[in-house]
Every structure is written in C-alpha cells, then in structure tokens.
Image 1 (cartoon, chains in turn yellow, orange):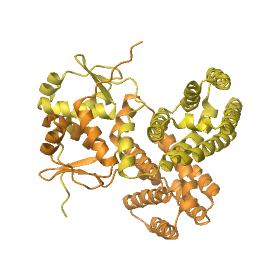
Image 2 (cartoon, helix red, strand yellow; image 1 turned 120 degrees about the vertical axis):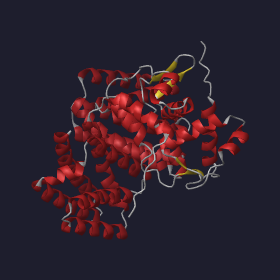
Image 3 (cartoon, chains in turn red, purple; image 1 turned 90 degrees about the vertical axis):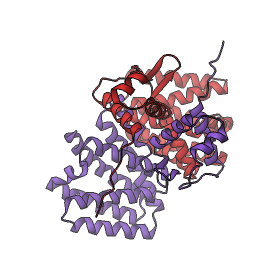
Image 4 (cartoon, helix red, strand yellow; image 1 turned 90 degrees about the horizontal axis):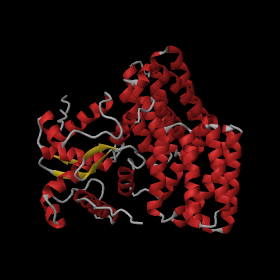
Amino acid sequence: MFTTIKTTKVYEQVILQIKAMVSDGSLKKGDKLPSERELSSQLGVSRASIREALRALEVIGLISCRQGEGNFVKENFDNSLFEPLSIMFMLNQSRPSEVFELRRVIEVETAALAAKTITDEELIELKELLGMMKDCENEEKKVKIDKEFHYKIAKASRNFLIVTILNTISTLIDSFIKDARAQILKNEGNKDIIDYQHQCLFNALSKRDSQEAAAIMRMHMELINENLIELS
Amino acid sequence: MFTTIKTTKVYEQVILQIKAMVSDGSLKKGDKLPSERELSSQLGVSRASIREALRALEVIGLISCRQGEGNFVKENFDNSLFEPLSIMFMLNQSRPSEVFELRRVIEVETAALAAKTITDEELIELKELLGMMKDCENEEKKVKIDKEFHYKIAKASRNFLIVTILNTISTLIDSFIKDARAQILKNEGNKDIIDYQHQCLFNALSKRDSQEAAAIMRMHMELINENLIELS
C-alpha cells in the first residue's frame, strides 16, 4: 500500500515558520512581525506567498495588518474563531438551536468552575453589574450589562479557551438573530425572571456553590434558549 | 465624536462574496468554486487578491485546493478550527489543563444530550466498539476504537458544532501530548477502570438516562484529565 505524500505548500511553510516563532517565544502578543520583504528573503519564498500566508492569519484573526505600519500579532483573540465557525455553520446548514445548545452546554459547567475560582473582587464587580442591570431603564445599555455579567462569570473560570469560545458563540447568535438579548428582554415577564435568575446566580457564586451555580445557569439558559428558538 | 470608518479590504470582499454564495445555497459542500480567473473578472479584482482570499479559506479548512483541478468546498470540517485554536493557545500561553477542562465541560453535557437522542442503531454500534475495545490486544488499535467510541457519542447528540469542537480539542491535546490516550492506557490499573467506565456509560445511554450518562462521563473525564496533567 502506498501512503499519500503530503506536499507542504509555500504559504503553509510560512505559517509553520510564524507558528514556530510564537512557540519559541520570539513572537508575542502585540509584537510586530518582520516585514514582508524580510520574511520573503529569510524564508526564500516569493512576497506573493508571504502575503497569502499573512492574509490567512489575518482572516483567522491572529494578526492585524495596519496600513503603512506593518503586521502585528493581535492582543486579543476574542473573535478569532468567528469567521471559520460562521462559515461552517452555514455550509452545514446547522440549526440555530445547535448554537444555543452549545452555549448552554458550556455556560452551565463554566458557572460551576467559576464558583470554585471566583475572587472577592470579581464578586464585587458582579454585584455592581447586578445593581446596574436592575436600575437600568435604557434597553440597549441593559443588554450590554447583561453580556458583561456573563462575560465576567466566564472569565472567573480562569479558562481563556472557554471565554473565547463563548464570545464567538455569542457573536454568532447575534449575527443571525438581530439583538438577540434585547428581543428576549422586551418581554416584561421574562425581564423579571431574568433579573431574579441573575440574582440567584450571584448568590450561588458568592457561596462558592458549584452545583447550585450550574443548576441556576441551566434554568437561565433554558429560558433564554426557548425564547431564541421562537425568534429564529 | 467620529466613528472609525472600516475599510473593507479586497480579499475581505472576496470572502464576503463566497460567504454570500454559501448563504444563498448556490455553493454547497463538495462543490467546485468558480476558477480564479472567473472570480477575478466577476468581482473586478486582481487574481492576487482572489488567491489571498482562497488561501485564507484553505487555512481555515473550508476549501481545499487540488492541484490542476481547482478549488472545492470541503465535505468535512472536522479540523476547521484547529489551526486558529492551536495558534491562539500558544500565543496565550494557555495551560494544557485549560484544554482538558474544556473537553470535560463539553463532553459531560454532550453525554446527557446523547442519552436523549441516541438511536437504537447507534447503541448497537457503540456495543460493538465496546466489545472490540475489550478484546483488543493491540494498543494502537485500542486507542483508535476509544476515540471512535467518544466520537459516536458526540455524534449521537445531533449537534454538529459540538462534534467539530470536540474533534478540534482532541487533535489539540494530541498535538502537545504525543499519543495522549495511549499513554493513559499504558497504566494497567487505568485500563480496567476505563473499560468499566465505558461499559457504565453505554448502560446509561441504553437506559436513556441523561443524568447518569453525565455523571459517568464526568468521572471518566476526571480520571483522564488527572493522568493528562501528569503527562503535560
């Protein structure tokens, strides 16, 4: 039996090279990459190939190309997975409910993790957000605070990958249901329940009770998902 | 206040155009894309820009470029998120334990979902894999069957996004711990426990018992993660 020989394409070699620089620490977040000309002579490949590789990394969201300044490793990868995930979503003719379900799956266990690792400072910040949400009359602002509340809980899990994936999912949901959260909050009945669930979630986190935090997050996600399925 | 005007780059326009074709259904999985020349004249942009956009989509794993044949939308996106996720992982100096944790978070709830949606045929397939794992003397083969067992459970959840993310995580773990599963199975004590856990997982799925399936998957993942942390 013959095995297929994998031919490495030139742009793949360029990406491998950049990955190696990241891996050995010579390229860090925020760093400027060598110029296209430098990369081209270092690697002995055409500038067109260098440019192809750099564009690919830009689409993925790992580097940003600033006109006249050069190429930089991004500081923040919050939306790095969005482009591939959203195209995959379309090509697979996925149901929006798959995305809601994925978010539930991750957020429930993330709340459990956060209950173990959340700091006192983070609890104070969550409490502030909770107060702001209750008092807020401006719908748009309220949606922002709501997002921030969930984001802070994810961050409290101390798992960066989880934060990134949840962010991507949230952006994906917003991309196919315009103002998803705002739509749900429109319903007066939901508003009170959601405020109450946020409060209970905060209480469970304060008690560092993983099981309770997960149970409340599950109810919270189920309420939200039911409403999103109606909208989608 | 001024808001920044977002300049859309040429290659971004090309990707948007391809996304639109996917979105309206004129481009499906496995389809051949228009040639670079056609795209270039249709969109009125240079072939270099077209090539940059296509390379980017290839790196993401959404299209494959076959020498002499043209560019095709992939049939299978199992590893589409691997490249961005692995580079992000390095740039963030993430701990391997974050990846193990993410897998646990997803697999536990996925087992619960699968218990609700698994078909009789899938249960028969799982039972066969279980028998093969027990009888298997070849370590390498056993690892493959083990992966297949987990993959089938994920697929039984009927959530394609979950399957893709779990696959990516599994590849990521393998990329920094060579033969991760084989290493764990080397330990004779682990082997018996893992066989037993797989059997219990199968039983819970057969009973369509979500809670039990999740609880066993949790124990299973905890055992695996403890061992992986030692190796990493």
